[in-house]
Length: 332
Image (cartoon, rainbow, N blue to C red; front, side):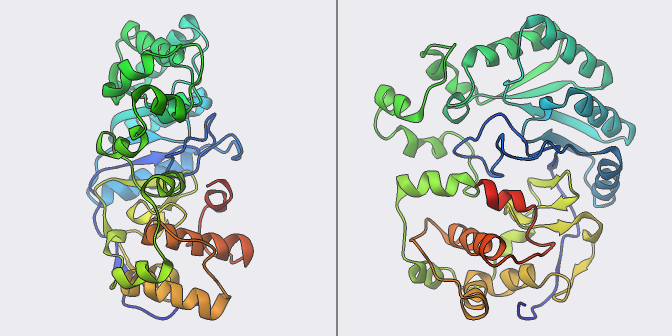
């Protein structure tokens, strides 16, 4: 399928998290993993979580965060996650939430109190214009207040947006053009300088429309050499299916069991091609062996890579453990 390349390995993990589910109430325009209501309502199970925790500890990581999707869409499942993480002696830094589950003070306090007893100490509460397109801000305010009443620390991500969002009707959602009308036409283009956004997933399309695109050949010419960012472990993720996402490249996967070992070209032909030859080698194989033809210009090499991979999965029906989960390609 792909040319043989030198081996590479993920030998140590620094800081990262576990994705409990891809199912979400929202389909945010910056979402790296294409989370949405269209995903299956799968949730991480105890066995998979245990394998993940054992593996990351063996590779030097003793703390994680938990995110999704929206983890609170399965409160019982989330409670299990908090308890299991604690039982393995791994520090739970925080759980992420978009607050869409808030249905009133009483129920929120009940859910958070139960999680507090299980070991949850900090909640990362997402607040951004992207989230406000789908979630009325009163829900965010409600979760903040419930955290205060249950003695759970609040990690607002990010607090800088609070006043800007709160200037609108908090009982309604507000599209990004409303923010541009109120705060200036360059509002969206300024967001990445204020808010950590990884340019993958839906962010590729969102910001291609803002920053413009380049011809495929120009991108390839400007990106010689292998994709060494596949080895980045500074903010890693493993998902509910036991997939490690190398370099936060959503839709690429390394099996959890293979972390710590050399990844051979025979077992990981796609990833070793990207690691050894980068987008140029990957593009060459996709065009020669699979008939891929660019249908547009691209924001970056990552945009081109994702479009090639989506073509392989959805158009050519390539089934590979390296191109997982399929839902990424269906929902971005």
